[in-house]
Image 1 (cartoon, rainbow, N blue to C red):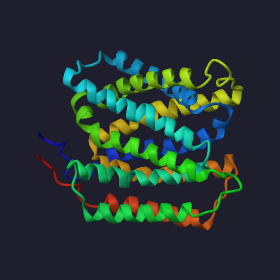
Image 2: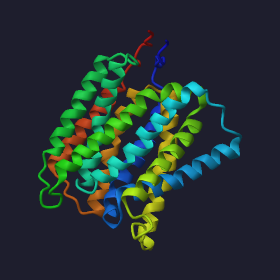
Image 3: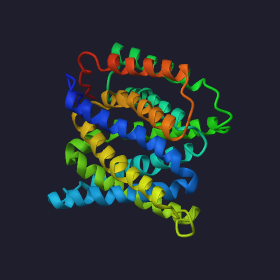
Length: 306
């Protein structure tokens, strides 16, 4: 069975799409931390991604009709939907109940390591020295930045960090295994369909375990403005750009751009949430940004076939 061939050169348009997506992701980390105290994680993510799903599905239907998915592909497509649009958004929102937006943003820098490990285990991509050095630097920067003490503003930060790691594993799984379906059916089609499936699961879980009809959606004007920002640029545009990135560059090349996520998250959190901005955070960010440059330097990985 053939594996997905990786590009032999870096596609800078694809990298730009990934950078846009991860920058918007940084915004959503800070805004989720800002609004999560007023609602519940399943409810927030169901509404946020529900709005985004309507937008993306509307674009797909306006442009034509969905392609006919092969019956054999449906189990994998449903699994990817539950991983990326059910597990990932829930774990992220749940994490930000406990940890800070700064730590949540920085924690996104673990995604390249998880992506590379999964891609290597399943022989989808080969490791290169540039990737290895970049990932080690990104992890070092993350560890250095997370060594800041935040007990006064987030006493359960460690628990939140664990949930954030679970979210990164979910996102990395989608990065690695979605490419063949994106290439077969188109990025927007796969994103729209998987988002509808994932949101449906979120809505059911929210009704069972939370109170979406009993107070979890009682936002004021500012709250709804934040929710719509999380839904439209923060979900529809962010996920569309990520799908475009995955259709033109390798999962690892896309994943290493997540260093931009903490830059944006920390900038917004410092202003909006008055979270501390320390020398350790600065040092960690410098290492993460350097890691992006190194990991994206030179030729991409050679195709792997089996």
